[in-house]
Image 1: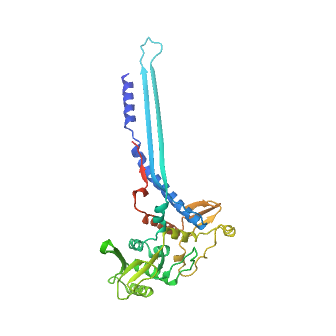
Image 2 (image 1 turned 90 degrees about the vertical axis):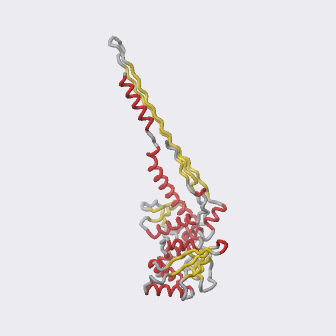
Length: 357
């Protein structure tokens, strides 16, 4: 009988010391991360497609995730020893039971009202673009996507009543800025003025410039009508600059960017013929075409087998091919801009609470 008691005590000790919590951390962290990221991409692409069809976009964010685990187990062990003269003989009974429960509770919150206006309707501040430039994002991605005009030179507009091919000077400026950026000859800083007023300044380095970069900087000055003797220029939001010491940048909002990207989607010809969506500008074919065609969203009746992200709408699949690096980079940049325009409140952060002990 003493052996039965030893086994029973050992099993009870094992059940009491086993915890499900630590084992769930790697699984939950990465699986929830992947699920939220994939759904965010699909939601973004769906809203771009909906804008192409003049449908109302709606963003729903994951406000919180609460996942509760319960692990219960029990072991029953009993027995009896009989004498040699007993008829029933020795008796041993062993029983186990267990229960595992996973009850995730996910809270969703639609982005509407003031938060929608702040995140999607307000133009992105020019200083935020320069921070991205300083952080290493290429100028030939930032400016064609986010910038409407620089000192009056306009970018391509693929949608809306103001459809246009874009000024050659704008794309020449983008090329020159990218060249100076790669050389490290351009930078920015924020100056603090009176009443906590900030001024954004773009400057060019002299000491590290090769002759090629010097020529590029001179051409930038000439294109924008800047004072050639100055190295620092105030950056403001607007269509036209006030003097030769200022660079006026007219930026787009997130919604404007999405509308412009939506116009570049390859839609079925029958949808255009049926009046579901209008035709857009033809794809650019000039030397700046790779600056102007920002994204390629393909469409077809069948679900794609090689997609970076894909959604189903109006009887067709729309997707970005995972081998299309430029489109993926544009799409990832757009999603990063979402974070850039967040209000910064704690309510926008998904919360994962997992009582797993």
